[in-house]
Length: 419
Image (cartoon, rainbow, N blue to C red):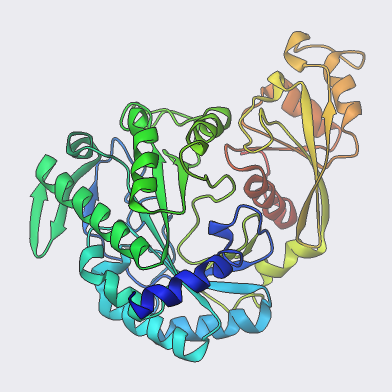
């Protein structure tokens, strides 16, 4: 047996307990994302993906990329202030392997300076067969590969072209090169004992019919788990004719695929320059050291209570008038705590013009201890009635805890909350 394989096989099961993206139950360990590369080698179809996406195809953009020296400075500061930081990840905002020299220098410096740190890299997989053995030699513990189709035909609808070894390949030809490289790279890494996860962007009308087959392919290649994500990311509305999965639909798809391979339920798209746990974002960008910026500290000292409209307790995906209960959350000292599901009388059954004895005021009475209602949409009349009682309104379609943090920042800053 290859000595590298023996080492990775013996250690990665232990390491997985310290990487929240590979452990559904680890809400303590934190990951720092270091933005090292801006270029991408895949041109994504705009009618399938929201905006220009690289790396794992779901990463949001960041303020700027770092040099290896700046990345080490950032990591030093983060480790000094965040004791639960266990993973250093390179995941964008472009494709990390498109500038491997920069990535190699950074990973080598981290491994030499912080041998206890777990190393993670996210990639679209196009260049994995070329660099997989190098990543192993550098001590990378975890690889996430985004694979969105099992067929070149579907891939031709998702990608305009790929740039591979100095040449552009279009349509099914390019998609087939990408797919074969993804399969080859994942299979090799898994055979060497590396923990590999497959990210899948679930796109209605594009690749949704292939999701179970993708999960099956991930299993056959040796992946530990798959992470099925919303696309268009973070929005319910149509995007160029595409509608995102609802939270119920997405979790139903995950449960269906759970019989094939373990699924990630809490991992979500994240910026390429954040420090975060599964449920808490600890920093927003790289302009200043973690914990030193005023906006990083201010909300942690306040206390707010939220009434959230959600159909499944995961996403803020429900209209205010359709809610039969509120999910009640507290935000205090930077920590979000779920308190209870509070049943209410559904508002849309009543008249929009009811006065003090009407349904809206009975509903307000039920949440008078709350500072803000968070929902996907709300009518003008109930919104005004809530504000009359000093209850703010924040509208979003997002994961509940992300929506709460957005609302906290606006509440604290004094900005208009109703957006």
